Image (cartoon, rainbow, N blue to C red; front, side, top):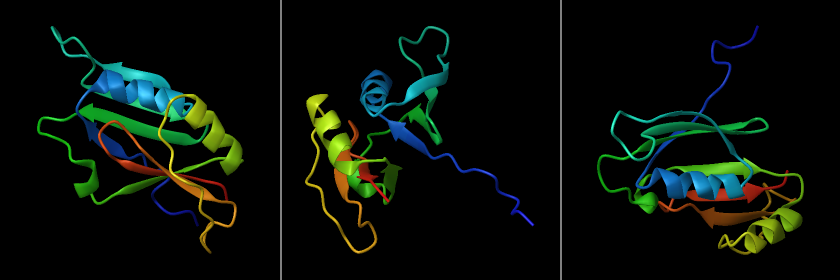
Length: 123
């Protein structure tokens, strides 16, 4: 019998919605939905998707300190080396590829504009 939860979508608070959307678009996400309050110059919330990956972003009401958020995001790809080159060519600062025992295909770190740590990994 399947469990009562059928999906889980993280929501990250961000300082600058435009900068965050532009960053995640470089990772292959597209904006699926947004909400912009009346009189605002940028969205207060958005829903991003890339194949089976989904992420919501909301404008933070306080400063965001990425390293203090206590969460890591794992983004899976088909080829870690090719994705590493693609993101580096797109101007994203990528860390070195490592192959720990739990990720033999390789993984590498990337930080988003708010300092959230994403590991791009190949299973």
